[in-house]
Image (cartoon, rainbow, N blue to C red):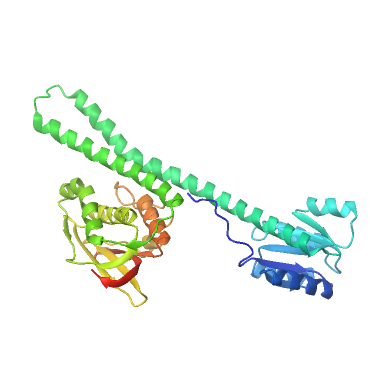
Length: 369
């Protein structure tokens, strides 16, 4: 899910001016470029349509009265094209005829500005429309994320909760509860499923915190962070009979320890689930030339195909691997955390040779710890 934060206007906002009058194009170009907008212009509708289809602008200032193809015709053409129909169009005209104004809105224009122009009015109207467009795009993305998020969470929680109820029903049906070994095995399955459900809920709470909280970067004691991550996964490590190799010392990076603990929990737990049998994990770090540090974990699993690698860190995507819990939610959170800390995430994998997951962080001054 995304927060509705708007970009600072007018940075990187492109406006296309379509008007057959050179003086008008020059004046609007001067006004808009002086105020930080990227300005393009075309003298007629045909050339404008070609440019818009090749490189859609963020907003169009469109003159109504033009020869050969008037502004209404241009607007109609753009609104019928799926790629250009949502670009906001502000009509401009020297005529203040009510019929033209009404038709401008009827055709799909978002505003109407009369000539001669008032600089303050033009800038205010454009900023308002650009802001509204960004709000609309942010809201659409938020709804899309929420839908994918709800589907993923429901899928992830359904697995462990189904196990809890299933094994509980099994216990209730056992006639002879004196068979302690059988009862203990069932209880262990219930306990493991409970752990999985709690971990998912913890991830949801963390995701909410990452979205809202601004973390101050400071030198990280990665030895302590990894140790805490292992403690949280003690039951899982024991259950999978996992072997984890950790370096004797770590380069010191800038980050936020509570979030990095969650990153390692996700990477290590995925290594335990998808590593070999038993899983053998190796953790390490490399100092890069760009004053960044790459932290990584490698496993002895079957590897991940190039197609799966491409979608691995996408928002709330999941890999369809057997009936195991998917990577999706956890790696989505990992990516958000590391991006917020100024780094990047990635994976290197060859089928049959295992996988290496990594994240980068800025190096702290006087690096090696």
